[in-house]
Amino acid sequence: MAREFTSVGVVGLGTMGAGIVEVFARNNVDVVAVEISEAALERGRANLKGSTDRAVAKGKLAEADRDALHSRVHFQVGLGALHSVDLVIEAVPEHLDLKQRIFAELDRVCKPEAILATNTSSLSVTEISVATTRPNQVIGIHFFNPAPVMKLVEVVRTVVTSADVVADVEALCERLGKVDVTINDRAGFIANALLFGYLNHAVSMFEARYATREDIDAAMKLGCGLPMGPLALMDLIGLDTAYEILDTMYRRGGRDRRHAPVPLIKQMVTAGLLGRKSGRGFYTYERPGSPVVVPDEQTPVASESALADGARGIAKVGVVGSGTMATGIIEVFAKAGYEVVSVTRGAEKSAKVFESVKTSLNKGVVRGKLSEADRDAALGRINWSATLEHLADVDLVVEAVVEELSVKKALFASLDEICKPGVVLATTTSSLPVIDVAMATQRPADVVGLHFFNPAPIMPLVEVVQTIRTSAETTATARAVCAALGKTGVVCGDRSGFIVNALLFPYLNDAVKMLEASYSTADDIDYAMKLGCGYPMGPFELLDVVGLDVSLAIQRELYLELREPGFAPAPLLEHLVTAGYLGRKSGRGFRDHTNR
Ligand SMILES: NC(=O)c1ccc[n+]([C@@H]2O[C@H](COP(=O)([O-])OP(=O)(O)OC[C@H]3O[C@@H](n4cnc5c(N)ncnc54)[C@H](O)[C@@H]3O)[C@@H](O)[C@H]2O)c1
Image (cartoon, rainbow, N blue to C red; front, side, top):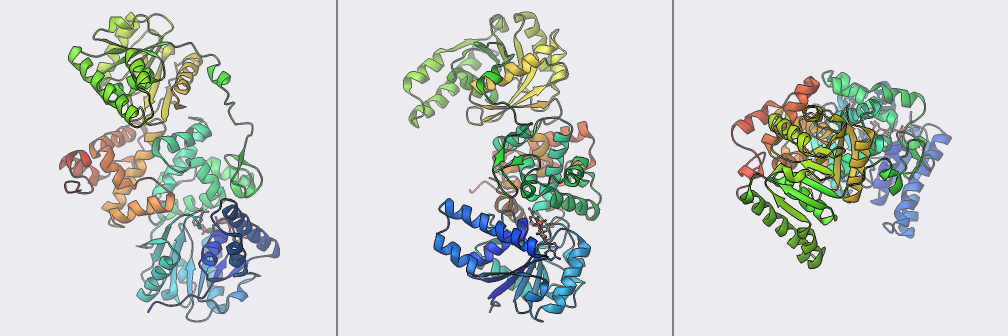
């Protein structure tokens, strides 16, 4: 029989604590909510009220249920109020000495059978537990932010946590409507170990002015389907908390440089820019604690005319190539009303591309998204050719041929001869340096990267890659074209992986390393990222879709360009590729897809 939890205590009512109180009170559990002072208690009360009021406003909670929820919460200053609860969850700032002091005190005031849990993200639960005389009743219950919304709970057992305590806590999580993964005590557990290297990397991109905060966040949201971008997530987590988590992970996790907090984070914490809770972090919020972003001096002017500022007019577009990307890009331009010249290596290829574009447009007609007349008009705007000479009068060329530098350079040299002056020359490369193709021409200022995502007609993101030679006019033109295509163009520098791949693939590689170290299973790791962080797919699902060979190639490029030891491809990834397990396309990758 699982233990009954009729009343629980929550210590610390900040970002996490207030949310944890809400989770319990929503599930009919009485809560003693404890803070350090009357003022902090008031803030905690306001946090809880703000969250439940928002739930009522969104129609997710009835007013009567909100009032009942509040009546189950007893706010108190000081740990003494916790003498008769069955379980305590501690959610105070991420400092080992503070948590140890609190656990020693909890051990004195709580009844002997009470379970003492910490919500720490990165500290050792074992080290916290030894501050008590009951380490076998100490456990990690790691909720995700916002606790009332995120389904995942990581249950962290130490080597001394007793099995019945683990089982009781697992049953409790189920009662709370959460999905738990039970794991051993390691820095960052599953989700944070995979998340924080990525967040820190995103901050370093921002610090280096590699891209703006809006563009970094838009890239990850639109390119990967994440619920929020990394900088907005840092603001939600709280920069002080994020700093402590990174610092602990750096020290506990083998001094991986990717966890050494980027200096900007410390500066922002010192300046009081803690994120949402203080009203300002990477973004500015309506008021402290509010999720509503308001414009500030970094907010870009988003009007159409501002986008078109300095941009050249583009009416006719050449697309070179006949693969998946070229086909999608031809469709995107033709559908948006541009006259398109498609250049392939022969009539046979052109016929194939034509069929693919037609099939894809037909799907739009069947789904009611496109009229037959619009389909015919789009197809009518495409001219099919097998010679580059037909690009003599286009305003923009988008190159999407094979990912080989020598081929692309030769093509750009030819374009340089053929195209009229002032034409924007774009490459869709996803891994080669754009500057290399730019320097194959006499007009590097007109060359830019336009990195579309697959499938181009569907994915809303385009990375606009400017080299150190790209002119402002060329970048402005590229951005205006993206906007005219109905896509979000994010501007970034010419570095391996641009924004999305540079942030995504090291995370996927880390997941493989975690699996390789037998810390958890592919299923639990996938769950953790989907249910704890709201990712649309877990890392192993995504790797199988993208292809393990493609992922390995991108990871190798990143490693070679940045020489970051932590980016070295996971040996398991290499072995799977060598074994021919490439993911869905070969029937097997991390999972077997043959019978699915
Ligand atoms: N922020 C996140 O996204 C997140 C997610 C999961 C877990 N966590 C973990 O949760 C814990 C709390 O983080 P947070 O972001 O909620 O921090 P926070 O700074 O928002 O809140 C901490 C609260 O603890 C209170 N406090 C400090 N000392 C206290 C004491 N002696 N007694 C009672 N209350 C005290 C503070 O007044 C404050 O209200 C940390 O261990 C953190 O790693 C955070």
